[in-house]
Length: 166
Image (cartoon, rainbow, N blue to C red; front, side):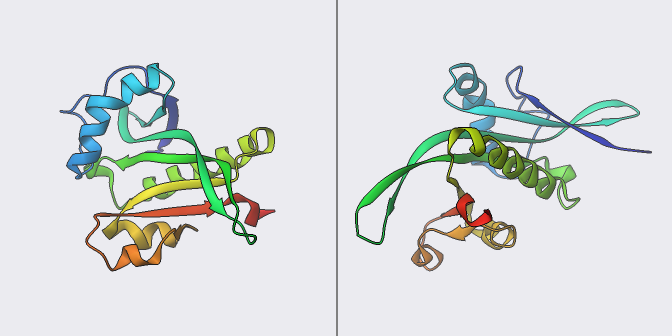
């Protein structure tokens, strides 16, 4: 059986009964906020569906927003750069461990790189759940503040500088 992944904009509210990534906070954001933020253009939420012989199955969701990210330059002046923030990336629990999250993250980064050629996006940011830090690090993200690794925070702010890819 061949599998094809389809990435498409969110067209309806996320059904809590049909999606569970194993993280209550992400599940709650998807079911309570994602569709409304998507409609209001505060964030863009995308669903990833797997087309099988039986039809479409939701594999994952991601939600992105555009922010300004302040960076202190060498002359100690803070400059705000446009950035894409990955608000949510979640893979359905029964589909985890099969590479779908990696495929989705690569797709997101590729599309942001393409878009950055026209809209001057410099950074990709996210707040990684602490136990997923290494997963993001292996995919090119760096901790914004390495002290976050030792404190009691549940998330670690991470970034990728797209300028490094030139």
